[in-house]
Image (cartoon, rainbow, N blue to C red):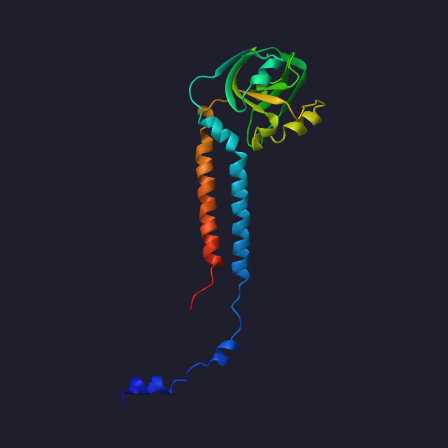
Length: 213
């Protein structure tokens, strides 16, 4: 018998009792990782769903649909999330402005005269927003109900209330200057969000899988 064989034979073999006496592995870090990955996955999917309107709009092609005069009858036959061109006078009393984080320009919203359910959003540089601002009479942009305009417009109702204006839940919004081409940024954001969600789901499944002997 060689020395190596003798050493292996004389070495004590752990029994089931010895293994059972070992402390349980710490799983706190694994649990925290699973919770964080689950939360970030849900947040990514929520953001992706909230941008679905911009995604559909960005895939449109062709020319804007000409609506002509923006009368109340326009909304009766209008299709949500459509690229349109229209004409109309804006109210000088039912108007308010709001700001978005990380953007230097202001946004002015005004109701279309003779159409109580249609508001137009205009992007206005800060130095031009005031008494010198003259609203245009024709607009080209995205036509969408306020309720489905997306996460970027979630503060509109609060901004209108703070300005003493009333925006109906059934109101429509014409976002002047927004075109399918200018909204293509959402394609990259959606791909990033869905890829991140898929990566997290795979990681969650692997961490949740029982460890094989």
